[in-house]
Image (cartoon, one colour):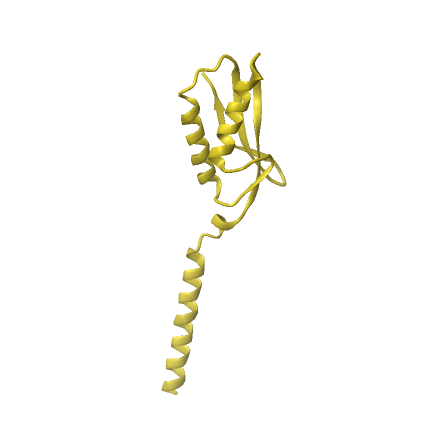
Amino acid sequence: MKKILVILTAAICLGLTASLVSSCKDNKSSESAIYTYGFDQLTTSDLSESVVIEETFKSEIGVSESPFTYTAGDNKLKEACSRAATTLSTRVFSGSYTFVVTKVTASDNVTIYSWTNK
């Protein structure tokens, strides 16, 4: 009887440990999502500026076209966009631009990052 109780206790402890380990795992970090990028607002007579802005964001994000799949998560995507914005802040643009990165979901599109030159 004592032997059965020890085995049963060990099995319960093993089950609890396994459930704790799996509940602490961040499954969202490896899930991919669909995103788009582009200009929400664009007023310019020099379209080469818009090319510079788009290429800077594409380079920092590490993509070549929109829509794109991104597996690193929203926070890493925001960090990449922030780096692009920092790079662009060193330039003077004659036009007015708002560039957005959007997460596409089944029910709605969510703006992840928006950059407007000042």
